[in-house]
Image 1 (tube, rainbow, N blue to C red):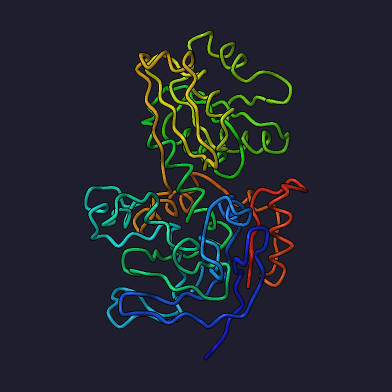
Image 2: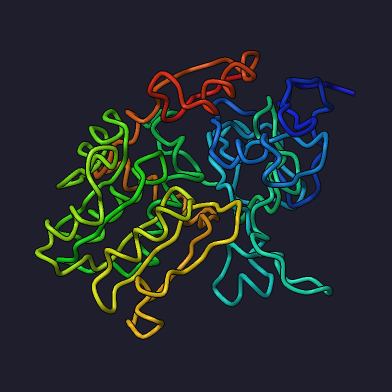
Length: 357
C-alpha cells in the first residue's frame, strides 16, 4: 500500500512525523495532494492535550493543494486543479446545514448535541499536515484557487481568515461602528481586517507584543494599545470618551480578555467570542450589568464550504486585503516537529508558518 508522511498525534506533548497509508476515497470524496499547509493555535491545544483527539490521528485543518484523484460521483472538478478546502467541511444536507449552521454539521447525535460537528480535519478524521488528505463531500468543499494567487496568499482562507472575518460578521458590525479586538494573533489580526471591511470607522487593536501591534496597523487598526503598558479597559474608555465600543472581539480564549471585552462595551453592545477556552468562563456581575445591559454575546466557529472559500479568495484577488505578510516562517514537512516547538513557544515573532511537503 502506498505510503505518505504525516504529522500524527501520539500523546499529550507529542506530535511526530510518521509514515501512513495514502487515504482511500469514496464516491463523493477527493484526494488532494498538499502543496502548502500551516499550524493553528487549535493544533497546539491538541498537542498539549487540552482538546482530545484519537491517538494516531493526522493533525491539521488548513489545506492548499492539487486534486490528485476524484471520487466516482464527483462532478464539476478535474484532477490537477489547484484548490483549497475549508477547515470546516459541511455536507450540505444535514439538519445543521439546512438550518443555516453549516459549521455545526454533524453536531446532532442520538445522544444529544455535540458542538463543532463540522470540524473534521485533524479532529474526527485525518487532517492535512501530510502529503495527502481525503476531502469529504468534495462538491460542497473544494474551491478552485484563482490563477495568479500563490499558495501563501490563500493559506489563511481555510481557517483564520474565515474565523476572523466570521467574528466581525457575527457581531453585525455596521458602518461607523467602533470596534475593539483583544489579541492580535493570526485570528485577531483577521478580525481587525474584517471589522474594517465590514464598515467600522474606528478599530482598536489590543496586544502585548510590539510586532503584533505593528501588524495590526497594517491590517487596518486605527489605534493600538499595548496591554503590557496600560490598562486597555481604561485606555478604550479614554479613546471613546467614555462611550464604549459597539463591538468587542475576543480572540485569545482567556478569562481576562473575555472580561475586558465585556467591560469596554457600550450599553447594548456585542461581545463576539472567537477564543478557544480550555477552562470554564465566569461572567462578572458588574461588567454584565447584572444581565440588564442589553448586551449580546455571540460565538463563531470558522465558516466553511466552497462558497465561503470563493468569497474569501475574491477579497484577496481584488486586492482588498493582503494576508501574505502574516507568513513569518517557512518549514518543510520533514521539520514539522521543530515548527511546532517554535509556534507553540511563540518565539522569534512567529505568526503563521507555511509548511510544504
